[in-house]
Length: 548
Image (cartoon, rainbow, N blue to C red; front, side):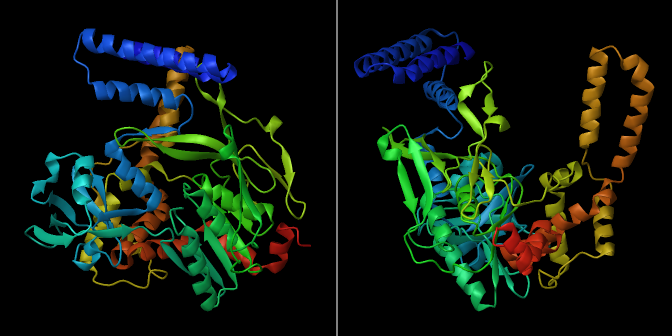
């Protein structure tokens, strides 16, 4: 297989170099290489010692070829087109429930208000054991998703296990057109500060944000937080629409530039803005990419918002989908985008790789400085730098294990069963006694893991052995290992605040769905707190944006 892929990559490399050859010669080289590939495939298919799957073999070749360009140029076969369409439109035929696999179980983790799952009595915490009388344990995750989704108006039956109910429950639904909200939540985070969470850029993202801003102003909001943390991006024109809420009509938002003339486009705001004066803070993280970075970068370039959080992902590439034969598609990177000041924030240079194929980051030495509308200095080549940098600590090893293995989920399910109601989501908090109940509940459960320090110690031991220092250092290394092992026994207490936060968010979602999860987390959210502080301090806000 490796040899076949290597041959294909050689062919691809030959094709990639054709942009430097005259058109007639280029077309000949394309035809020649395609003929070589077809001949090679026929010979391998006929003579290889074991049976080969033609679809899988060609898919491997296609994926390897496209991956040599960048991670965003992808082949989408017919059986994946619907998922791709759902990702880009936020729409599908289903019942409006989100599920997750925990071990061998498929559990309901979220319900969307107003859709069949919510209206017909499905609950977060239910374990789905059958779909249309087909046992989920006998089908793959992908097959289960296909069974759950389907044509609007068609019926589907779920059989679930529910905490506190002895026998499985069967619930019937009629599939509806499900539209995932780009703005899953907006609300007031203080008396005068409104908050809008934007999680995607599918159709109507701009409209949803605008409606949220208008509603918050009616509630008394005198400033706005736009939360783009973890938003992977989406439709470019929706990023333009979001910017248009806060900047005038006719302003440049983004330029796209590519090899083909049709890729060279300037996108400007087209509508009357919602509010040109209201103070704005935009939250970004390492997971904020593409369209999120266009919004953050544009508002930063015009000195229209204070950017708070971590440096963003650094994806400055634009993709275009093209139809292929047999109902398949290809998504191709066709251009790079540039913010109004001229910045391209692409962090990885896929056109210049190392000999081992790894990708090179844009070095600081070649990054260029640009000036915002009011003369502040900003840089290209590595994501959007926040005006106020806040580093978030990653989840501890124990928190990750408790979440991934379903312990937090299962405790939340039992908690909701025992407590018919809880306080308002913003006020809900587990007491120390309730957290101790969780600690006691965890006793005897198998959740083996290693802390980051233990992983690094293992690497140190291996390196010491290679360099022949191990014998001399063994007593100290053994002592460190013993102390780390002992410390790990107390991790449920050491990382109480972190674990408690995730527990509270999961529990609150059982009572208040997405809103509960978001609102419960506000009291732990250092970036939201900082945004409120800056927005409430006009002098600081204006100083950051160069208004003084």
